[in-house]
Image (tube, rainbow over all chains, first blue to last red; front, side, top):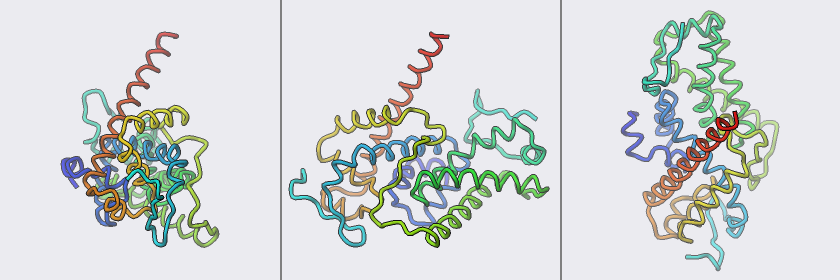
Length: 79
Length: 205
């Protein structure tokens, strides 16, 4: 994967959101293992995600998980 | 051999060569330091994604880097030294798979168990957890309710993103852009606070 492809394709976000297939993730890993810029972007994103999980625990607790990762939203959901 | 990084040289195009490999083999302290500094974060990011537990990811970093050092110190080399990052990625992959196998063999983790909080903090990410959380709260507070809830749900590993986007009436791109913007704000805030911290310590010294 070229750097421009990673940057233009939101590779960092897709990696963090677990949206990449196995081969896509591997291609991006092979790129960022050699690219400090992408590593830095990914590191700040991972740090954000870790802390989002930590601070969001209370609010997220309102959501009930169904089978196989499906989610059931609470009645008072904002949407 | 000196390893020149930063200062005018684009670090992302760092070229690994036979001298670098020889430096690892011969325990050159400068090269070893660069090696650890350069690779520990990508290894942690991959391990964190695969293992899902910060404490296990830290162990995977140690094990991966140690295996690579042992490999070269044993006299082995790489035909193409420029492929060192790919070589380390593959070692990391094997290490995490081994750890996952060992985990499933010896430890039954409840499906709904949350990730344990790593009390040591993550590698170079040195801002204190409380401060990071405060920054994240500030970023979240500036988002519309819908985006805030969407973002918080999206980062849960066991949430089906397709279903989530459908429920919120957005597409996947919206979710990526939302995370991208939050990450940019978070990063800018990190840089700002780091600079402030440096100025403070410089002023004090």
